[in-house]
View (cartoon, rainbow, N blue to C red):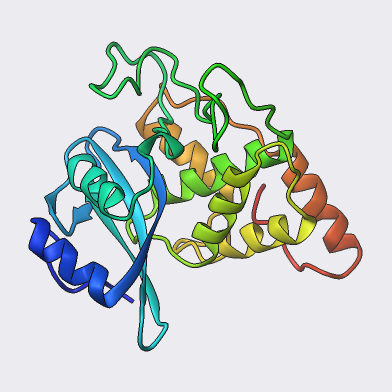
Length: 227
């Protein structure tokens, strides 16, 4: 379901919040030359992906907004923006944003997560890193706004990045990737992004692929959409 109304300005946001339950999914750096339609206007740099759920019908959808509009939404729904650090798939950025994110060698997976004190680094499970990166790369590559399973998985990982996701989550991500409009596996999606953006970070999905191959052998899954 698409959000067919503007969310520019406080009154528009209040009207949306009265009608929908809204929760964030991700905060992503826009790649040079990319275009994302935001409900607050044209997106030119960084953007948030949000899920919205109709309070009466329970139908869900997703939308994008630029970072200023996104910060306003987070304030209104009382979520600390530090819980959604910038996902930047590129290397060798030259400056930091005004909120301290996006500097040189910004990690695709942030070192600080959830409610941990800022002085404490959270130990990420390796599989969680792969799943986290996979979903954010899908968001980066695809034009449509994510919602539903994307939000559930990302927010589950954020609650405790050290708690390894189940194989069922990997199976779900494999299914989500199968919905690519061009029927590309994840590795091809990343390779095509790197063709256009040579400074794309290196990503590995060996654990995810191994789990899917085991599921294929067991007859649980038909195809590996990771590799």
